Image 1 (tube, rainbow, N blue to C red):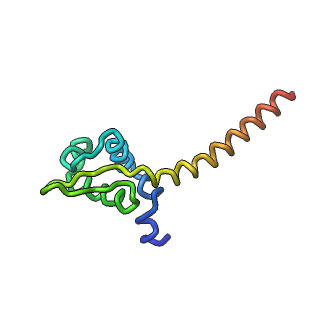
Image 2: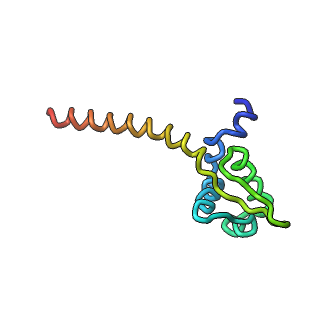
Image 3: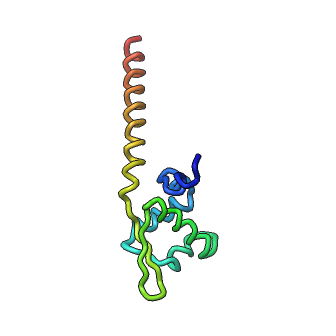
Length: 107
């Protein structure tokens, strides 16, 4: 797969557990600076910053500089693509379960 495409792919961005945790943390706050995010992980600021950059490349995170500090904020809009993809499979499995239930009730 083309790495440029992967860089901006929401599914690639949320595939990593660290990035999913960052999304959860940012979802629970208006904005958070890197120094408040880093203690939640067993890695340094540079590693957390790299994960934030991947989320930013996927448009899941925005940032703004305030003096020497950078604050990060969740942009949940790209997650709609994930929701739409999952809803298709939710419908698929609900229909299969209903079909199985009907078959079992016939016997």
